[in-house]
Length: 119
Image (cartoon, rainbow, N blue to C red; front, top):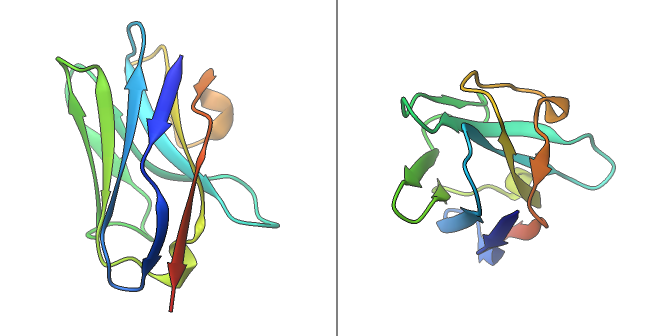
């Protein structure tokens, strides 16, 4: 089970942090987002054991994914937010140490949280 927190309405240039707490062991956790009328897209992922990370080009340099092993929680720190970052953000987990960029590669999903960035 993945439980998300964070999100909300911010202005362009602001920062926001999303959290996702996992119950049970995970191997790779990722963040995806889905804007209205668009497909769910990869944002970032982290391999739990190695700490290796990957980011979508659109967020590279602005977003940071991290994990807290003790809390079994993954975070998405989002800086310099843009209106085009507006979407519902989902955390996801998969039972593999290999990062996947596709929603179908993840078997567990959080409930989603709205992030709205106003211009």
